[in-house]
Image (cartoon, rainbow, N blue to C red; front, top):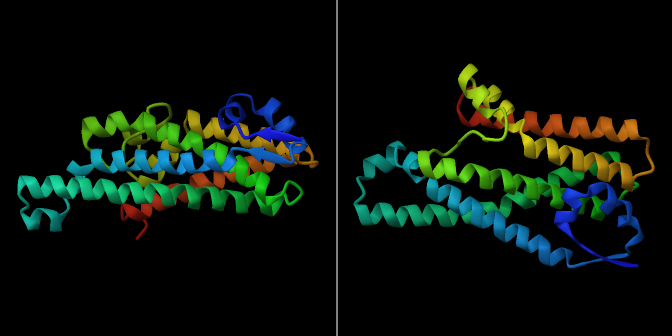
Length: 223
């Protein structure tokens, strides 16, 4: 039986969608949609870097260069181009690392199916980035708080980058992604629901902590 790879229904109706997933020997259109994810990710990251250019202008070596207006404009587009390239690499890293993490606990599901699940979840990451873009264009900041989460609370009550990023990552899209992962694991695996829930919670907590530690390291607050 052949089924069509539909990423949006997998997000909006995961219980129904993944209930039939194992019955499909082939998933038509997945790779087209996967490359579309890479393209959208590249575009959104390019726009993010373009919007954040005012913050990059404050870097010491950029200020020391004393660039003309035309040179600054060229640098801004080059930065956006670099951001686009990075935006293609990011989903490969995120999807691959998430797949390997889950595969360690759910070999019965298989690598391909878990890769599909993580590709679906990554769309929520892109949705979160899309919601942040308007704030970036307004503020010109490299990093902004997620408006649909606790990011503002982190900025108001904590000075440490770890706690700011941790609260910023507790948002609608992260919670939604965790729910999708849990439902997918429950439908695709023969393991108990409690086991699926425990791994999903561990999965979410692990990556939130890793991203938060990285944010603190980048801001120089871990050294």
